[in-house]
Amino acid sequence: MDFKAFQVRQVEKKVFERSVVTRCADELPAGDLLVKVHYSSLNYKDALSATGNPGVTRHFPHTPGIDAAGEVVSSDTARFQPGDKVIVTSYDLGMGTDGGFGQLIRVPADWAVPLPDGLSLKESMMLGTAGLTAAMSVQELMESGVRPEQGPVLVTGATGGVGSLAVAMLARAGFEVTAATGKSSETDYLKGLGAQKVIARSDVLEGSDRPMMKPVWAGAVDCVGGEMLAAAIKAAKYGGAVTCCGLVGSADLPMNVFPFILRGVRLIGIDSAEYPMEQRSRVWKKLSKDWKPAALSEMVEEIALEQLDEKITGMLDARLKRRVLVNLQSGSL
Image 1 (cartoon, rainbow, N blue to C red):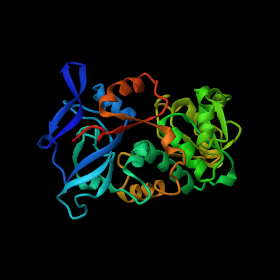
Image 2: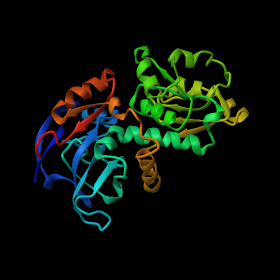
Image 3: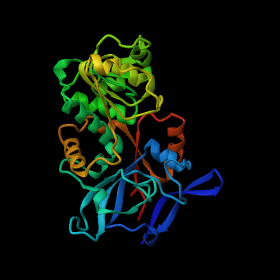
Image 4: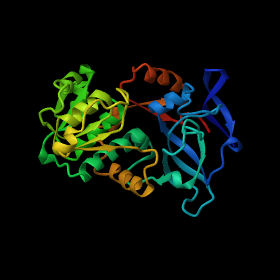
């Protein structure tokens, strides 16, 4: 069976080319499930893979795409039947294993989540790994005892994929959300997602040169790292919790341990790649109901596979304003 795929090829050392090609299903890696991909989404890790970043992908030619949603074509396990709708994200998909930027993928059954009731394949990829990561962050805050009545929750990097979805989910869960962004032009957009207040990054960092800051946040979802993460921790209230899922600012954490010892603040790392399947399924079910953003369709731009190359460039240049939804079935299989 032939199918279309976005493929990255290495033409010489540190030189890579990207194009849409026709492939054969027999070329796909071994796995329990052959899945017809309906939708995928563009993530920063995909952009890195598409440019040959060895920290993401080492072997080429390769098809990126760490997200995929579609229908099972064939199954070697009783857990899934042809026609079942599934979400496949994380693990090695789109990194060492050909990913969701192809109309077909073959993967282990352990990577697949049955599509929950209340969520379409399209909606699942409007959310994608970014939505899963945001939901994991909200889940961890709530399990750490952070409650709406305790005060505002900060989201840093709020216009990014994880940040914007975290804003919407926290608002749906009843929290008073303060969104921090370096893009003042996106204030109305963030308030439309549910943020009660939008502040500049400089507002978060004001006074962050001190060991501890005035306690403001009941909790925080940090998507930036570095000084922003440190400032969120320093300004957390007693017993507050801060989740960490990004390092675009820096991988370093420039601070001391005072907030952890004197205020009992908790720092929680978020990793969606190896998130246990039982918990993963539970979070996807919440995303299909109570935590599904009301304005989900307004948060994405839908494209065809042939438009993907320009969007990868835009992501690397920080020019994208919305999440990118890739429609794999805009052409024939």
